[in-house]
Amino acid sequence: MGRISDRQIDEAIANFRFEGTLIEQRPYGNGHINDTFLLTFDIGEMGRLRVILQCMNKSIFTKPVELMENVLGVTSYLRKKIIENGGDPERETLNVIRTVANRPYFVDSQGDYWRAYKFIEGATSYDQVETPEDFYQSAVSFGNFQRLLADYPAETLHETIVGFHDTKARFATFKKAVEEDVCGRVASVQKEIDFVLAHEDVANVFGDMLANGELPLRVTHNDTKLNNIMIDDKTGKGICVIDLDTVMPGLAMNDFGDSIRFGASTAAEDEQDLSKVSCDMELFDVYAKGFIEGCGGKLTQKEIEMMPMGAKVMTFECGMRFLTDHLQGDTYFKIHRENHNLDRCRTQFKLVEDMEAKWDTMQEIRSEEHTSELQSPDHLVCRLLLEK
Ligand code: ADP
Ligand code: GN1
Ligand code: MG
Image (tube, rainbow, N blue to C red; front, side):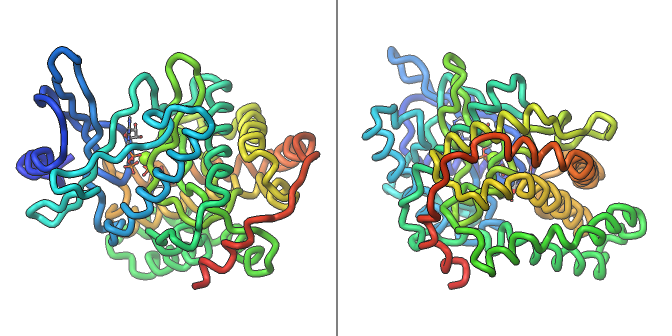
């Protein structure tokens, strides 16, 4: 991992209300943003207790206190809903463990911010789809997450990353990175740069529709990749949506699309053999079905119509973000090898091309199904939020 010293980890561990004797600590998971550790405690006759300890990435999340306010707000709201629905709030939402000073986060002597969550036992976060059924279940859960938060007071949420899915603004940032060429990498990625420039229209679609009032803003997750959901090992159901750092007003199609970009790909996000990368239409289909069901009839006709576009926009945006980071010297996404962000960018652009080739099929799948019951856009309340 590198960024965090052992001394900092020890300092953080000493400052949370953990029970028992620490018997193991190790880096954990495949997130690209935070530094995540799994801690195991021996609690005597009661056995073992595991927790997740995370150092938040403060160069990305520049206001960690506001971020934790969002997390606490959303998890306590979900907790109530889960209890009302007869669910298990210990496993179906994240549970923040407080510090000895009774705070939801700890600031260490280096100024880094830490938080801890109960580990969700008996469930797995997958990096690649193993069965269509799992993918379907993750879709139901992400849709359900959006439905459960439909009446959440959106105006209380802080915008943790400004313009997170403002694809148009990200296009402008990309162009600036090309102009500046701080690492001298532009010449070696001209093909990828040309791909972005040829797709400017994709960057503008949703911004223009939002401006015209054609799409509602809702409280969305905004980072719906498969490893941000825990699938129950026994029932196979999506039990808990995790990684709540980017819960903010956003677009339903982006939550849909980000899942497709990651989970409906036939290869890993960083696969180097591009012949293995394509968008699986069966997976697209099962995910669309599960997501619409999970949203419980809340999506508008226009939103459903724009779901394939959500897949294309999110995939294009993510590829462009990886390329921008490659040009800027890999300062945002964690990398584990040379040109890692470039490899990631290439898989995303291959997926965009494949979606373009399969565009008619994607439209058909979407329109064949699920368009029967359509509701009014009752969440326009959020519309003004991003403009404030
Ligand atoms: P990042 O923002 O870096 O992606 P995440 O919050 O997604 O960080 O955490 C990284 C990984 O750690 C997740 O993909 C998941 O595998 C694991 N993880 C996070 N929180 C929990 C939890 N409460 N219980 C079990 N696993 C978790
Ligand atoms: C990051 O945090 P993680 O690894 O779940 C990123 C997403 C990207 C994704 C690409 C806060 O997600 O936006 O789509 O990597 N999260 C943030 O894999 O930037
Ligand atoms: Mg994550």
